[in-house]
Image (cartoon, rainbow, N blue to C red):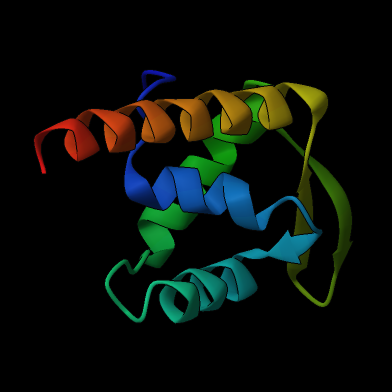
Length: 98
């Protein structure tokens, strides 16, 4: 998985994890915030969480009732900011032609 650009689902996953959340909650927030334009299935969700955890972008902060809660690390916040900057760059490029 390359860092920038992230897929929409991976970007949104990191965005949600600015606050502690578990997998199902992350999926629901993404669907709600995107008016169901982006949906993340369980396989993608847990593969992405595993990748982000292994690479130090998120931390597991609690585990109860089979719900694991995660939050961004400083590295994850940096990656999220880089992605936001990338989206702003793309937005500015598009605005030049409209």
